[in-house]
Image (cartoon, rainbow, N blue to C red; front, side, top):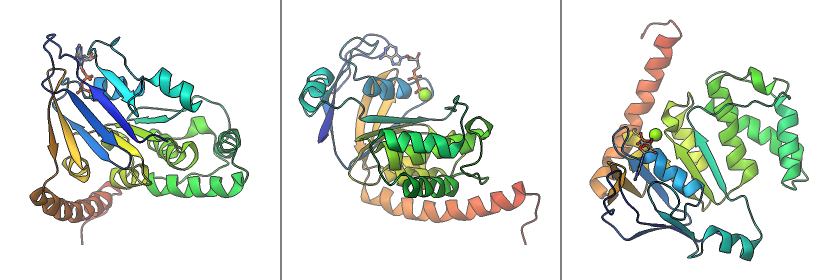
Length: 251
Ligand SMILES: Nc1ncnc2c1ncn2[C@@H]1O[C@H](COP(=O)(O)OP(=O)(O)O)[C@@H](O)[C@H]1O
Ligand SMILES: [Mg+2]
């Protein structure tokens, strides 16, 4: 069980030490990563994804339950515990959606593969704009459909302890639903984002600048009450956007 991951400080792009010692993130927590383009958000996500141990340009170290990744592997005999979703992932495998999901579910030792696949497809279709089903070829899916399927797969089949998301608001899917699906069930979720709603849906946010971690802000009460209003308006805006996109007119 992953109880905690820690990010031990390194250096920014100029080689200056980052202004913090260590950030501990516990199971069940949602953390956002914010900052201008080029500020180092993706680099931080990648450091975590590859369990950096001083060898990346940032010189950061990542600990899992206070252990290095190799110590953790040895102790738990478990290799795959990070799932990542980015804005431009696509499938390259030439198989049908249903066959892919069956293979994956069976490789994870799931015996009721059929019912899991139904759930994954349902969840994926709930995220994607255009519907698809298990008879479709993986390679024929649109970008949004591919990402929707990956997200549902990470959430329901891979069942990893750490979920990393890199600007999924640009992935052509319902970002709020995706965020909720991926952040459920006691996972550690870390998401880089330019979207204020997703940033405020996190418990706290890491602020990046010049390749370094500048501060960590906890979402406060005022922000939380803004968030509920913003979510309402976002829903309304989505509806209007949809009408216009489909060539209609707002009544
Ligand atoms: N601490 C650092 N030291 C050296 N290079 C860095 C550091 N942080 C980020 N970079 C590099 O700077 C560039 C922009 O960072 P990136 O993480 O892609 O920014 P963002 O995702 O916020 O747009 C990338 O090439 C990245 O590898
Ligand atoms: Mg980036």
